[in-house]
Image (cartoon, rainbow, N blue to C red; front, side, top):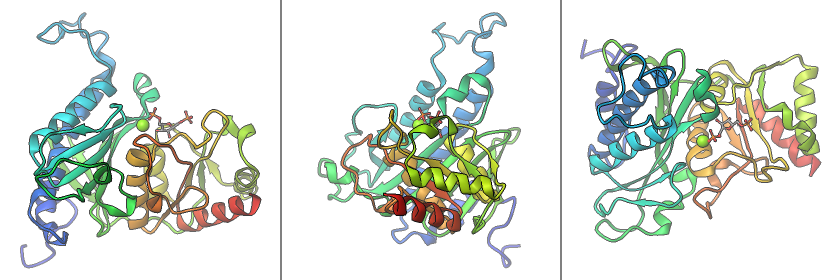
Amino acid sequence: DHRGLAYSVGTTLDRFIKLKQSDFPFASGELSQLLRDIALAAKIVNRETTRAGLSNIGGAIGQVNVQGEEQQKLDVIANIRFMRALSKGGEVCAIVSEEEDSVIDLQNSFGKYVVAIDPLDGSSNIDVNISIGTIFSIYRRITPAGSPIQLEDIMQAGTEQVAAGYVLYGSSTMLVYTTGCGVNGFTYEPSLGEFFLSHPDIKAPKNGEIYSVNEGTQREWEQGILAYVDQCKDRGYSARYIGSLVADFHRNLLKGGIYLYPATKKNPSGKLRLLYEANALALIAEQAGALATDGTQRILEILPTDLHQRTPLFIGSADMVKEAESMISASV
Ligand code: AHM
Ligand code: MG
């Protein structure tokens, strides 16, 4: 009924993007197209991930690819798929990827957008058939169209994101994104090849009873983290840790909980990357009423100085993150 709600559960992603286009301050259709490009690449990567276990036996069952090439690692394949989708669309001028040492300048100086992406995160889980994800952030370039891209176009604070999202390749594949007007989640229906709105206007519970942290590194934590995690235990919270950021984040977003990746000896600034892991999830968290901090400041306000810089990350239900932050700052 076009006179009723413009969208509802079951609306396709394409239609939803079109209906929401007026939410963008600079609605020209290009950001919409960019989101569609990302969704298409996600479908392709989804297809590859569902076959990941078959790649080694592909030859045995006669499925060696036409070029007869050796199978590439899935994270490399995912990078190629997303790079291709982002460079062909024409909306993007530069890409930062976890898989690439330096900025990819697409030599498309009229492209309005800069994308930071982790094409396949949680790579240690690929080989063992456990959930993995894609994480992306979209920025508008700052310098004028037509001129060469500059470092300032790339090194923007997370607050400047115009859109961000993730794809979770889990028991179902989901795409969750925000353009700064709330968060919506779509579930992929493989037999139809479409994402359908399944989680409209996601709101994170204010509080939760799940904590997610790699406790194997506990001996390296600072006092405040130890105290906070101890408190979680005193309260009888559940520990849940997949080791795939997207999956751990997604569960806590829906159920209420906190994810922690503190500084450790091996990773004195934490492990996760600001530009293509922390920022996107921080924007989604805030848009859903949750929070993200590095222990002392809002993730979204950190000014990046390095493409691949790392940050400690404490993200999830607002009350939990606030409490963790106050215990961390009290101990330093
Ligand atoms: P990756 O980019 O090499 O896949 O590493 C990021 C992943 C996150 O998905 C996950 O939350 C974290 O690393 C797990 O790290 P650890 O194994 O140290 O607990
Ligand atoms: Mg990663």
